Image (cartoon, rainbow, N blue to C red):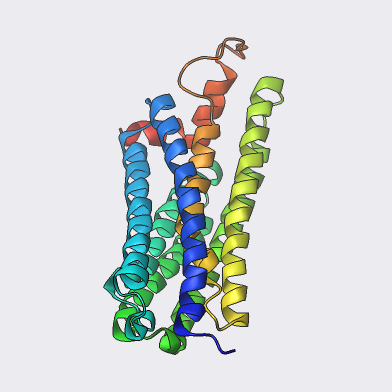
Amino acid sequence: MPLTAAGISFGPLLAGFALNTILYGALVTSVLLYFSSFKSDGAWIRLLVSALLLLCTANVVLEYVFLNGTLIIHFGDQYALSRANWVFSLLPGITGVISTLVQFFFAWRIRILTSSFWLVGIIVLLASAAFLCGIGTTIAINMVPVFTQFHRFEIVFVVGLVSSTFDNLLITGLLVRSLREHKTGFMDTDHIIKKIIRVVLQTGLLTAIWALVDLAVYIALTDGMHLVFNQSLAQFYTISLMSTLITRPRDHAYTDFTVVNGEQPERRVRHLFLGSQCRSSFR
């Protein structure tokens, strides 16, 4: 029995929306924890977190609006089932903006840790390519709204996913290597650094693998199954950033802190993680 238009596109969309909503709940929890525990961060970092939360909220709301309009309001309408609209077209653009903001933030951190302009330049170049491809996909969907014709601009979508995946892998590798090089030999400080490395490795690789699976499924299958993974990419990017932010020691001192060279180890790691000089310059 051949697949209908609904079977091709909206089964994966519904599954992706369910997963996206679950991840959004986890994201909101991490954002609330961040704002309640890291009040001394620079204003620009807090503004970045707020912007990412707003964009992820828009991502979930737009998915709901599109599915509600197509599957409920226009239930049984084959024309509506076969076409995307401007609401759906905004989703890849929002994902492109989110991935670029997150990767720019990690590029800034890598610049603090490595003082390497050419490495940061590569990260910024790949992130910018993903951003442009996301915006290009939004424009292309408005020009070619029929789902079965999306292959006409698949090169833009593929280039964006490839750029983003390689950027995530590069960022993860550089952060892990740089943090390892900054170990101090003091047990308390090194324990916190190891914890940050573990979170960076887990979340960074998970995001890269998720984007890679999305790309592989998109290339291998033509039934829209990649939408299960693609619809939640924005949440994965933002959660990877939030995970590294909330892994740091909080503003309040630990009850069992140990003073190392006149400075609490958690404060030393906090400065290492964000860069105290650059952070204060953005307040």
